[in-house]
Amino acid sequence: MSTEKKEIFDRVEGMLQAQGFTIAAKDDTRPWGGFFVIDEIQAQDFANQYFDGIDVENLRIGGKLSPKILIVAPEARLSWQYHHRRAEIWQVVEGTVGIKRSNTDEEGELAEYKPKDQIKLQQGERHRLIGLSGWGIVAEIWQHTDASNPSDEDDIVRVQDDFGR
Image (cartoon, rainbow, N blue to C red; front, side, top):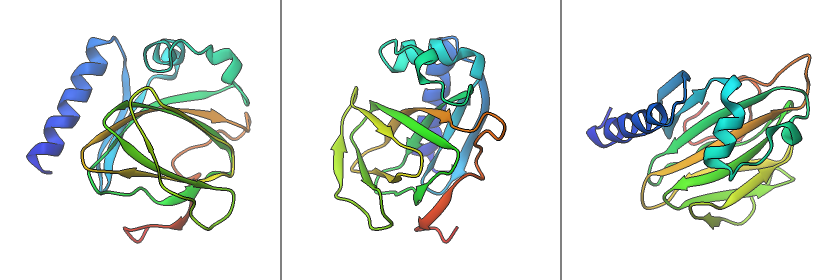
């Protein structure tokens, strides 16, 4: 892992711990960056910190929410993807990121988002998070749409992927 990547992961981990969050999982091995998963019982605290206090009860579709922090490297792209069992809400925390969206398999136009910008992705909507000139940090809440079969990392349909996944 590059020194720069290690430094940003260490900094974000320290920030989350200082904010009182319990990190349920961490993955810093993704070729595009990685993520932290926050304990679900802290979903409202997470929303208060990163989503201007949005009421998580109003977000519950299938009863379960999963808060995460995504870290995307400069010039890196997550897969062009969608999900069968979740919608997502993203809010940019740090840096400027690019996002492409579409309701078809054809990628939409690149839009730039800055800190405090919020993006709501519907279940099945194609999307791609893109690192621009610097590191991007994005808060994410998964809205599980099927209570009996919550979404997980396997609920990713990759239409296109730079890393051959």
